[in-house]
Length: 150
Image 1 (tube, one colour):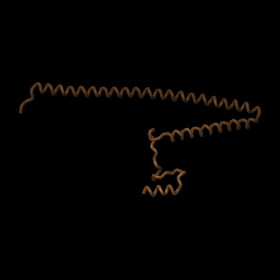
Image 2 (cartoon, one colour):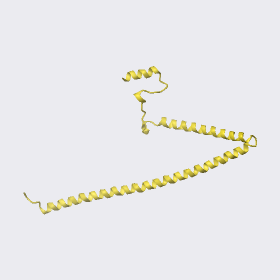
Image 3 (tube, one colour):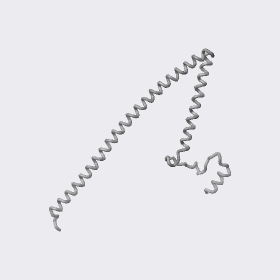
Image 4 (cartoon, one colour):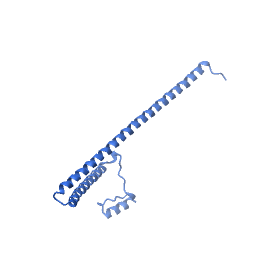
């Protein structure tokens, strides 16, 4: 068997060196990307924490203002009504306003869920057993659907 020529050995060494250089460069790029993701992640967490702190501070000031406004309302109504009646009236207004806000929020959430379709990543799933539990369907329609399915 013939021994490899010196030029063949040089080519093999240069090929191995080139592959090692490519792997080193790829590793460096990967490590740089990981470092960048780490820095961006830390910046995002810091920004989120700042936003949360400002939100909490804003809600605290809003709560203090709401309490002060309710106190003023009670004081103004106490000139016309007895103090317990004034407090009850202000409480009733708060309860009605809160209930209205919750109903609006529920309606808004319901409309968002209804408009979100398969293009938004939400697929409609049939209820357990594959039959619809829509109250608009009659019992005969549901049983016919079950028979047709089996």
